[in-house]
Image (tube, rainbow, N blue to C red; front, side, top):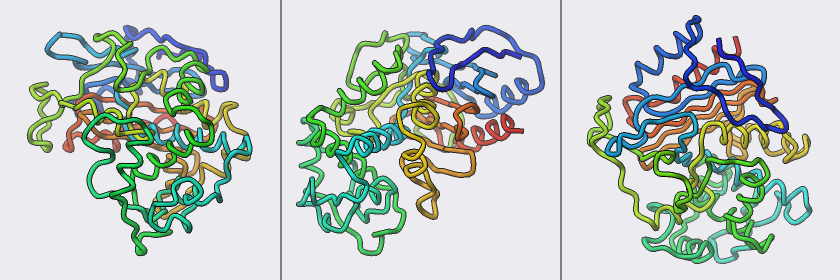
Length: 348
């Protein structure tokens, strides 16, 4: 079995050989699970801080014949919310924010903003609803995107203080980060994660620094219930959509980079233990809090969109993890059950 060291607090490891063939029972079981899902993407499995299993399958771009590999970057979609939440909590530690701050302090024109706290927004319990997709249908600055969204935001008394998944919460939280720091969300993300952790395979969806062979294209089927993997339907995304997903789903990452960041947030020195205990708690019936679904020793996050699906499971100490990133999303081959099964196997 492939077992290689992978730092947990300083997360310095970068490379694992992808061409090592394993023949033990664990690997055979995982291979079978992936084959059943017609998996196209990359998976990384970590046990006790060491890489236990990694594999890439399928094409990152069928037209150019580029195949997925260990350093291929995939859009992580809503998994990014956990990173935005950690950036908010860092500003709380620095005394620039409080989780009890009202939204009205920053965006008073949002309906009922005087009763909505940052904590409620982090836990998707604000009562805010945005009809349709986030953002306008043109490229604008971050604050202009938020201003446009605010014109459409609705407040639901029935949903207030009850869990309701609404990405607009994290658009607004990203805007609040910009207001209190005087820096763009992109700059904060770069300084806090990309530069700090020396990430080599992470960039924003609208950036073009990664080589074409290293940045995957998202695929889907006309019939989402079809499990076929013909790569016949690449997902076309407009430029404005890559900007509109501010703080909530606009980043491409490799599995190693994603593990580094999530491990850094959950078990590293980005936040104090007290901050983690406050942020990553099951704050609603859904167990959602701070960008993760928080269960006993299992912090889970997933993202789905633009032809991609990603699933993350990490133990509280960051030493056990399953990171699955796919560039071929189909409802019939939802990867969430598979990732959970594999994580349970890691913890046996």
